[in-house]
Image 1 (spheres, rainbow, N blue to C red):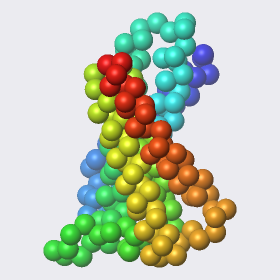
Image 2: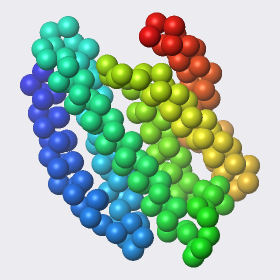
Image 3: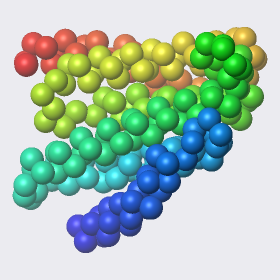
Image 4: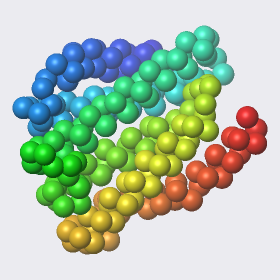
Length: 195
């Protein structure tokens, strides 16, 4: 328990130092730097969310409501950071007066891998429900994120011929996304029936 508290405190300190920088850095001028900060903050918040979620589920847990609220704030921060990362990745490829660039055509292989991972992580975090008033809405948003991630990944694989090797690490994450697309409608239906 003390080790978990110490880890959470350390991660919170990292967020407290990095988040103000991320929000103040101009995303158009310093897109790469802001993207790095955003991905880092998303990962930190996601890891903290996992640690706090374990504590919420602990039968010895006091003040479950406060810990649920902390988990919701961390989930929202992780989503904000991962979405900011994706926007920054595409911002550096924008042309004047052009619509949002398609990641399947503008990202190189390394950028595409990290971009897809950020989308996968955001979908996973979106589906974390903590005493929310609208769990069905969150699950539907998670399903939408998983679906978009699979669509983008398939376009990247087919159009750009990236990640052709089926042993590439993203194929495992892609398989998880596809599994979640199959499982989430059942979870949504269950939440609607029990809600």
